Image (tube, rainbow, N blue to C red; front, side):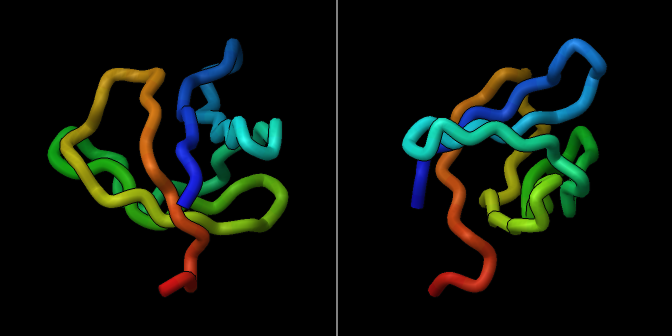
Length: 72
């Protein structure tokens, strides 16, 4: 379960950065994106999916723990 940083790039898109892999991808979809609930399943531009435990919408950038979707 890697720590990832989520931020907005200069174009206003959410980016998902995995430091351990030195990989940064654009977030294509986010399951929950409202002030009350933010997170859930995250789909990246390369097709991979991760899960972030839903929380109230945070200020960005934020570092969170994420797990690959489908992992136990």
